[in-house]
Length: 299
Image (cartoon, rainbow, N blue to C red; front, top):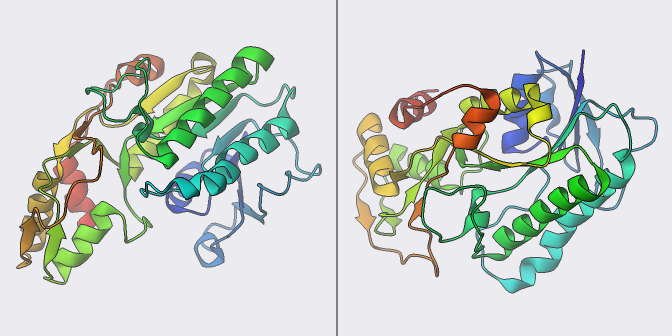
């Protein structure tokens, strides 16, 4: 069985990918925090508690067939003081992994997880060849990390590529993220203070995302040196999303649109072009967001 390393695999995305991939690959999760209670249900998944900013993966661990690097500090804040910590949690981890596994012929693909926020407030649909205009320290460091990965592929033939996810949602997502926050408020029939919510986002359910990432791994030879959007390819307004969730939950919450201001340089339509993804995996797809949201709410 092929071996897959999940770096930062004890977070929201990592837990879902680990569960999905555990029936396809031998999985080792590396993270500075391991959710022991969660992984107890998956004894076939090996877990290693390690801070990869300060440490390399020990030499007694063989090179895997695939590495998915999810490790990153995720924040929507615009504070410039975040740069140091963002560099530590992104650039240093990548360089440590690169120095550990460079030149090993077993490694088929190193997948760096970027962000669709790297594109910034440019016109949608967001294409992988577009000139990025990152609007936050997080987005900027992600974009720098993307360029680092592509440089390593060009200069050293490191078998790497970058995935730019759409706006993910699903089990284990932190409650301060938009969809979990909205659902929790609506379930409690509490007042919801939000922006006008005219901004649109490309949401993708984590289960669908896992399937698409698997398809990318299966086509690894076609992915080397690429940036690939992994999203739904459609955008929906936050207002439409809230109203659907409110209807499903029969919530009596008062939703106060406009109670909060948009962020500076707010992205009003973040929709990813998924043409390249469809060409690489040689499959068409479409997702019904309302159906996925209803399923998530009723879990």
